[in-house]
Length: 246
Image 1 (cartoon, rainbow, N blue to C red):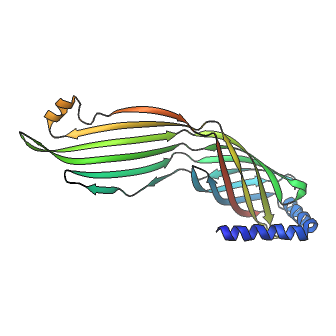
Image 2 (image 1 turned 180 degrees about the vertical axis):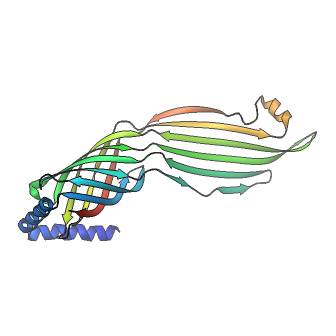
Image 3 (image 1 turned 135 degrees about the vertical axis):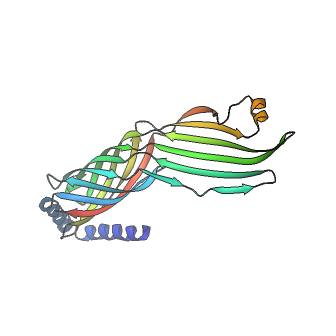
């Protein structure tokens, strides 16, 4: 995929260096004749996700483009459980990540010298992200009254809050005569906040009530703590998209 993109960009740059005036003029004319566009593509954000996008844009002139993109960033990622039997316990490890909302961005592109290259300005919203890691332990507990079954669970849950952001960026857009176009946009993202909250909880469950009394705990009552952390307020993104203008 990277090789294809590299060859495509090299071809565009090489063509513009040889026939810069004619290509720039034809691209500007195409943007004027077909001012409405529909986009589909992939949105990639550092430390967040790779998600499909769909969007719409309008060019009132050949130099200015206004649009909105909707990113399908509401999904769940979960790994298969990992099991580890030991002599006295049966251990289970689980991990999952939830992206809790859809994302969106409004953008403005200014085409430099009516060329295929543009300066981009974006205002957008990022989803909140919840990550959970769970360690479960099942064991047999021997007492004077017999053997009982016990279950312990340790859960770590961190949540990165949703946030708005602004982004200055650069990009290029190349269109064909039939209205099909390809565009690449990227740049830094300045986040409103990148705070995260981590919770840790311990759950106890057992059929041995003596053990519960000795621990001074109630069945399945969580005990835990919370910590907060400020992450970096600077991320980066790149969008690859294609579409049709009309």
